[in-house]
Image (cartoon, rainbow, N blue to C red; front, top):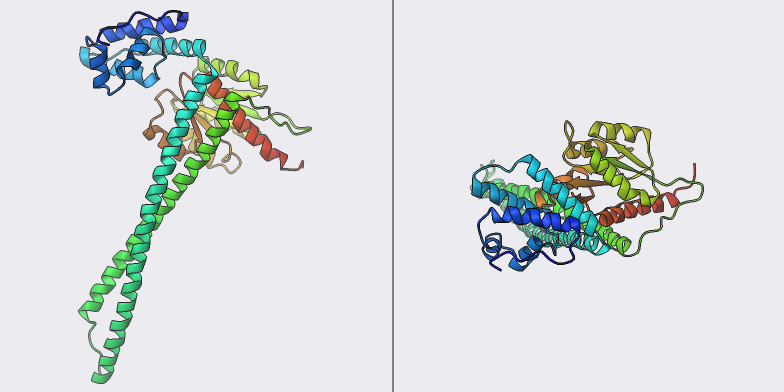
Length: 361
């Protein structure tokens, strides 16, 4: 595993071109495959297959390599190099795209959502126990305070005068107030944990439907006398819009494409039959997060699901911000055609299922 293995046999032209570019980058690191894999805490066998073209690496693996090369050389990697690699990567994905690759992508998302659900459930249990314990302590304090107040009242009556508040009572009152503050805080945290678990469970349900859609393409249940729902695609790069149109045209749905967040908001004013919005995160002037927040503030559009399309990788920081802004799903650039079609098909199916239950006006 120390040296680079020869390029694999039977590679597609696109996979070979990407592997050759990655090998050139890796050789600039001046380190063995095994040592680099240990540095990045990854499997050396996987790295070896990435570099001989027999396995397509996740995009974060490539960005890690670029960052390490920049650190090793002491110079930043140029934008031209990054875009060149991104183009090679996209071509390799398109050439090697298959339902199996889409299944891997969605299964990883399902595993991530399941992890969030389980973690939120455990946190909810811990917070629930802490909340119950604080409430029991408050109840005990109330009993003690009532007893002390009754005793003090009797003493005052016997003395025939008003006595100053007993210091023990003041101490107990202060302790009770602090506990009440903790109950309020814990209640808020518990509500958040339960909402996170509910959201994660909803994502799990969606992702399981998407896996079924990859394995058995969805036949949309078009209601009689009604048109197919539309899909809104928002991306400031014309090449990305063309690529998504080419991938989604097989779904027989009308695609509305716009190049900015502001144009997306305008499109939503003129159409009320979007099944889903696919939106790039990184856009000038108004990015995907800001655009999604504007959409969620509109009663007419707040229920339209948003899929964020991101080149930044799907990590907890970005996904948390995206879900907070109103996204319900994510897909990475370069996107997998099968995965994107499955996601759009499922959201369109859900849209039509809901419309079947709504009578014609």
